[in-house]
Image (tube, helix red, strand yellow):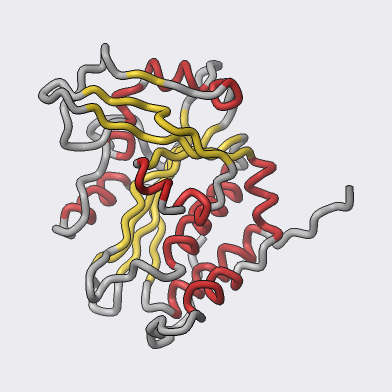
Length: 255
């Protein structure tokens, strides 16, 4: 099979950052998760930071995590996401979920962890090594928001490319609600695998159970995605008829 031609991670990072700037989003990257929590709490439209990325709930620092936030011209927080390198401690992903399930819960719910369940395919259950966990994705919606165009695709692939460049993880994973996956976010992010009902959360204060779907890809699959010209996503979403065009802003770089 012929070698697949790929763009470099730096090319992707620079181009995606420029596209976000052209759409009015000014990006900042950091590793202080107390700052990330405080910035998030200042935006009343944004959900609270989940335990996996809250330094008051779990071990996360510059050694194993970083985040991206975006502001508009007025300085309002309009985007956030974070990524964490999991400490697998010689085990596989299924064992990690079983041993650290509380880290992956959603903020604001009470769960009976003895009744929560983990269901993974044989392939996913054998994920080992350096594994990056991507979460906290939020983009401001509403009439003056930034959802609906290319930004969900651009920003998430930016974060994953930064993770690939910084850590070279063996696998990348995320958790999504069923509706989020069915609406196509997993595909837009570049994930190659979607596993339904991977985590089933039994609430302790209600008969209702919630579920998360696991999305994942290997390092080789993440590198395979780099063959796609990064401007493709801008042209696909922003160039369609009827899509409002934002005023171009000054280009910027993050690393």
